[in-house]
Length: 173
Image (cartoon, rainbow, N blue to C red):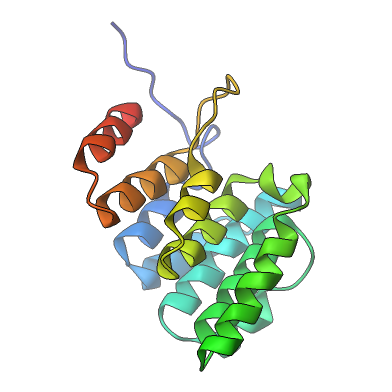
């Protein structure tokens, strides 16, 4: 059986995504700059990684400057930013309610980045069912994105379902 090797043409975000998920935020910035030629939705996907990197570092002002527009990835980043900046439970509830409003729009649900970011917010809030619903593939025929599978795995581990986490891990192979 021959392994298929992904080229950068097939996955523009490999290095950027890898840097983000291992927490190498200075490399995220470097890889972000390397992808400066992207446009359209791909540019917004690229921007979402840098924005999430800023949020992870509590660099909220920089994240706020970047989280502009109404594309699915940026809307999700704005919701994550609002949620992480919330000082009290009432502010967090408002952020969750706003996110739930966006979830009523199917166009947002079609974007894997939006689903992963929204799932992250629900996971942090302990809303495991809602978090899972956003990332578990429901037999649509298309293969799920790695980020969705990773998020699914994290949720199962968080709720101590190692059996389901193993199944999620098998889907990644």
